[in-house]
Amino acid sequence: MVLGIQILGLLFGLFMLYLTFLHRKRKEFTIKETLFWFLLWIAFIIVTLYPGSIDFFVKDLLMMSRTMDFFIVIGFMFLIGALFYTYTIVRGNQNRVEELVRRIALEKKEKK
Image (cartoon, rainbow, N blue to C red; front, side, top):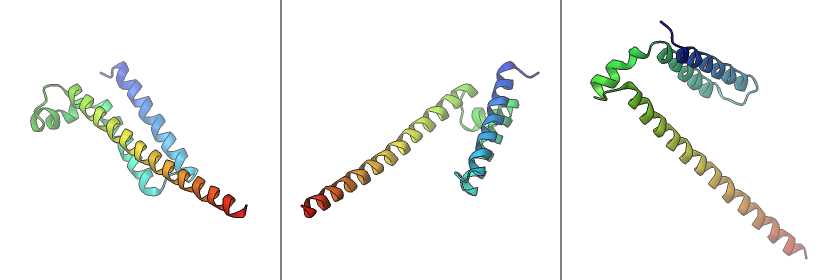
């Protein structure tokens, strides 16, 4: 029996597959990025439709009592990783802008 949350998860996964396709079509993603995201969304859809398929991994190998605990831990790990990655990108851009402003200021000063 398919639950309402599974239908919602399926629709979300299909929507994200479509968005990935659009980004690839606009040449915003490389083929490797596209394949990564397609595989991730397909795995998401499979786990959404068949949640018992990962019980062996979660309960026997990781020794977690509930599958939901696993998803919460993975979610936090993903969010922390994404936050760190975003911070490093923003910090790098900040350094480049700062260097560019310094260079422009020095060029203006030399012209005067």
